[in-house]
Image 1 (cartoon, rainbow over the protein chains, first blue to last red):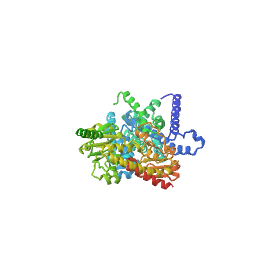
Image 2: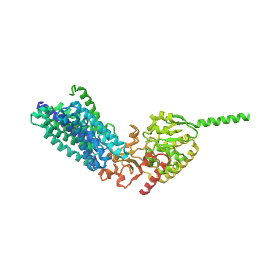
Image 3: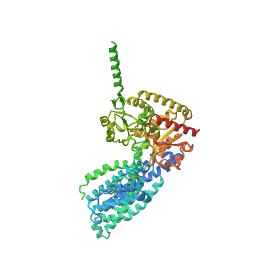
Length: 327
Length: 304
């Protein structure tokens, strides 16, 4: 546990990061003549652009960062594997497959794309866990990653397969292959926020169990918390958080992997602190990624998933090289 | 002496015939047969060229959708052609199986396959996808020479230019001082065709101005077919908006009711028009341009 003045400074830094990301995301966009300063002129156009177009996108970026960061934190804790994340375990790809099925198969279409994304995420997560032996109470780290890669690759191959079926379906599905929030509005953002806030509360409620399971499944069992219950609840929560995120924005890789590590590096391993820290860090990262996505390739916008991968991929590589023992 | 003259004339004629078979195109010079009979075309604008002089291709990259070859073309070329797959990735195997004696390919889509295509048959490569209207008319002349119908093509081009001049005379006075913008929209996005695109250059020829600022940076799709958000569209804000919809409801439809969309000049003035996306966006050439012009006459009649 770090000294409290240092922690105070960290919290101040984190707050500045989130605020800075928010301002960057709000200040950038398709209209060069609309900035934050023009808001003070009382210009109606500026108000419309900021409120209708940019604000929902900014909030969506923050919610996505929090959702994916939390999903990653929960998955890393319950699997006790530093490489676990919604993308590595095939959960994002499973959600994308759920969405693709909703577009292609009429029966699934009736379930609705959002629910199908959550079902897909959950199904893929369950499969990965089963392959790793998670439900027998002994999870193998290498099997977990390999299982995740296999489930992810299979789901993604199925998504790619739907491209070949019909042009119009392919166009609808292709949107779900890379994270993009270019044209997001309040409807989708509200939906996302309704998963983020309860998700954050649920993760906080689960944080004590996550502390225990971090000690090892046997230790958790000894301390009175059945690891299988923690595993199931954590899995459910991660699937809902990742599934809703994919249904709104498409799969975004690396955020769920990078953010928990950064938070642990800054705040230590206590989950009651880690949960809000991860939510704030994730939000700050995605807000910055959103701002950058509008600047990097202007005037054409880059999908936020691409920018997130550009930031996250080098970190992943560093982590993989640095981690000496995966078993 | 007379015999010598006759031989010289004959030799001269032969030389001319060989010279006529040398076609300069975007990837070099290709020797083509004098009167090719089995032609494979890999873009829609080349169907336009062949149909305009009454020649039917044996193979067409029709995106595996025969209806994409519109009735105006099938009325001339019939429906005996073999589909050689998509324009993006035509099947080299099917093309080879047709034993063509001339292939007409696109610079952007097929440059990498030029070597292989040339092994199958003499291949000429032109910029159909990236070129503007004027370039597409110039390409008609090249194709006319390549298929041994230079004179017929010259006549058709002259006739087309006269037709277009009449359309310009009808439209330009009404277009004066107005900006117009064409874009295609599917379920997920809007792509505006910039002033350097085929449709952009057509609109300019008819006297419309453009409020799009061409960036010039990036690849073909970034500068010619520009992905555009509602916020960006609100800054471009042209007097007339023409949409080709590939989906129903389209992405643009989802903007209806939003303050920024309703505040667009074209939306508040009732000057948003829908045209057949396929004809405007995928087709190029003389007949295609005349269809576009006829649509524009209708549009301008509604604005009056």
